[in-house]
Image (cartoon, rainbow, N blue to C red; front, side, top):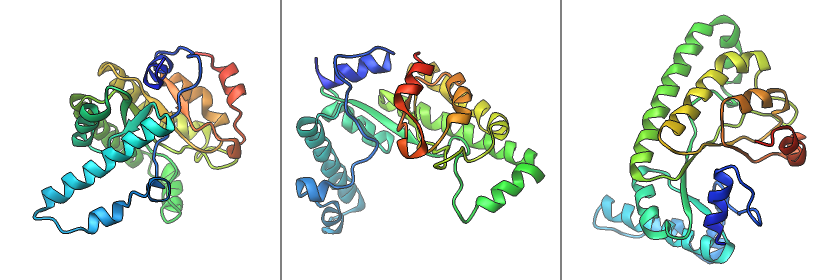
Amino acid sequence: MTNKQRMEIVLRGGVPDVPPHWELVFQIEKEMFGMDAEAVGRAPYPSEAGKRDAMQKHYIEIQHRLIDECGWAACTGYSPRDVTALKREVGHKALVCTHDWDGVFWMPTGETMMEFATRLYEQPESLHAEARRKCEAAKQRFREYADAGVDFFVPAYDFGFNDQPFVSPAHFGEFVAPYLTELVQACHDLGKPAILHSDGCVTAILNQIHATGLDGYQSIDPQGHMDIKAVREQYPQ
């Protein structure tokens, strides 16, 4: 069984002979493979298109190394163009996913945290309007990536600090869960699974996350007091 086949089994809700390996990002290609993306970016090119093609070729070469030498079962395309290229170049031996960073509210930055907390109580209608805009824009992105041939989606929304979710369960149920549910359904309508990425402690909202219909939960965080065995036992399907 190949690692790609193992990943396909996981995405269908099955259990393969061994877990497939895959990560959201890889940032040590220079240290591990001697491949320097900055040097590629600094090289002279006759046009921006030429530079873009060179950077994409460099990225695809890294994915080949990760798949062949590290056993990765999937890789990430950061644009529809990237997804199409990855499907063509490595799709025979790995699945291709993409991330979404802006479909729902998740942990605000330190600079915006106070403003967001204030809006939760003083401007709920404004937050719902913004949440709707985020949701609809993400649905459009999903359609574009599906047309490019993506195999699955990774909504990458960090919902947890180390000890608790970024908002109360009640606020999560009002301002996040309904829109996340829509996004999961949008992925399913496109015939694609959706795996949530979230760091941190999400115990208090895990029931709401499960109820969205997500196909998986990646980065079950021990630093956030999460136990992968306990989560699996609580939500076997």
